[in-house]
Image (cartoon, rainbow, N blue to C red; front, side, top):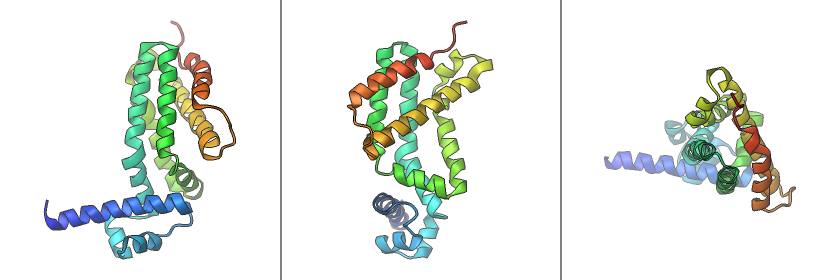
Length: 198
């Protein structure tokens, strides 16, 4: 890697980190490309050398800090369901809540972008669709004719976990311990994720 390549890499990383900090502190809508460039100490033109838009930078933040880990979390769910015990599933719920805790600061910006940017919906839909794809063993147990139902069950689980986490850890409108919540979510979701008996 040349010095110029390293400088470009460092600038891109600064743009990503600064964008994330601004989205967390001020919200997605309030942040402009000029705000990001100014905070990094570069020009708008430099921003556009690395990213095509504000949506693009948020997508890259999500891809580099959230999506890869999210897919790994759902690969772990595939393994927990393969084990076939509610205890393994409940342990996975606890792991998921820890993942949400790690990423909770950026989640409101993601939700705000979903509400404001129609094209961001496609990005979010793909991210949700990719999660069941990290679960090939689970999908296989449902058979070819019912894989859409299996995917829907995973997507509903994701939605409920996100909503619970937002109300619990971001908004503070649910007061319950994480361990107790994991136990209740395990009671609800473990049976609901089981393939029907043949």
